[in-house]
View 1 (cartoon, rainbow, N blue to C red):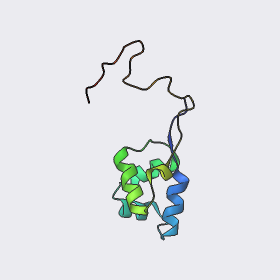
View 2 (cartoon, one colour):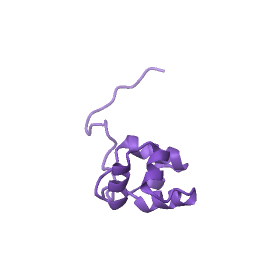
View 3 (cartoon, rainbow, N blue to C red):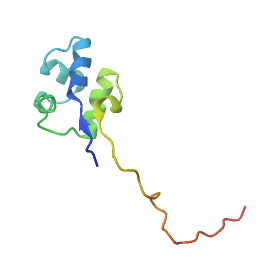
Length: 92
């Protein structure tokens, strides 16, 4: 299974496009601490969901734009269904 990861290059491209060329400018626009932005851009930390949402909102992009990765193996069954267990018919 592949692990999702933050796409720092998307953040820097979006930030540069609106004139935010420093970590300080990105921090001001997103409301995320400059030290956190620094660690994100350098790949030293994994962003929280709140941080991802703040960045996506600030630069008008989706969470999908900021995160890459998905499972490489499909689910073998639908979660919540038990094999061999019969379901009762629901009256109409």
